[in-house]
Length: 169
Image (tube, helix red, strand yellow):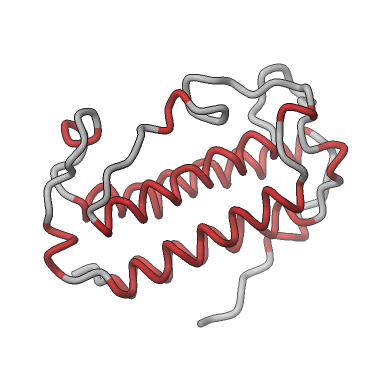
């Protein structure tokens, strides 16, 4: 049976891989689109960071706005204008802070939080419980966008040395 510790391990692994893939990209290239319409690092970091807030809200029972319409939401494709997005260091710091908040909430969430229904008009129809929503966001969703960042690196001609296996916790 999946435990919060198992989920936390997978989430931290995904988040660490994502951060390492972004770490050596020059800020000036953060909105480059070497392939038309590709999700670039600035959009990807903004996107996954928005979902860190959703995970925290789900685990703490707080209301949340659906991030789909946000600047880096699924309804707003990336644009190649670098000025639209925060500086790389600011974006990475926000992502890291969000990861730490999520990790703390995954570790501390009481059992009742996991079995609660998702109290949101859209998300409540998609996910039968907080556990399913958080598991999806912390694993599949983050890994999907980590793969997009990896593909962006290849298209941009960057090496994949960042993909070394992280140390065990």
